[in-house]
Length: 168
Image 1 (cartoon, rainbow, N blue to C red):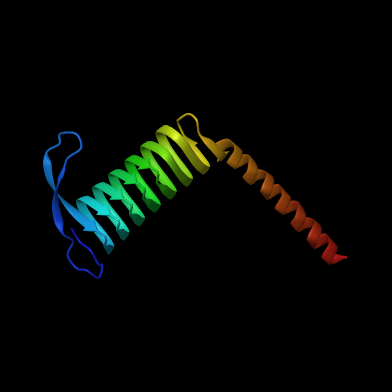
Image 2 (image 1 turned 90 degrees about the vertical axis):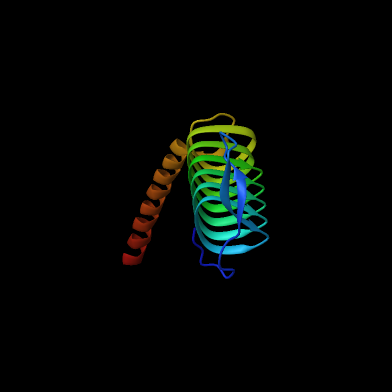
């Protein structure tokens, strides 16, 4: 485990492994801030971190700029960029979510990319790419591509008209 935050070494605690409930050692932040965290398991409670790299990350009322983990669970928390195999967001927010499997419960994200997504409650997102039902995205992959192509044509035509008017 490493950190470059102001507090130095991160305290350790005993957590339970998800599948077997076997006790494991985990880094734990309580009402604290950290720079970069690199560990097997990390738990944040009302805390923040710049970059987290872990096998398992559990955030409760916490935030991270970048979170890379095999498994991530966010409860009333936020992340700018979330890259994980398995993600669970409960009443949480993220800018970019990229997950193999995602479970999103009453959460919001700007961009969601998930191979398999389970949506419970309401998901508020701008762009959604992945499997799942009951998603109300402003843009899905197809509409985002259509919008981008149409915007590109408009900019191209406006540029030609503007250059033609300047030449005369």
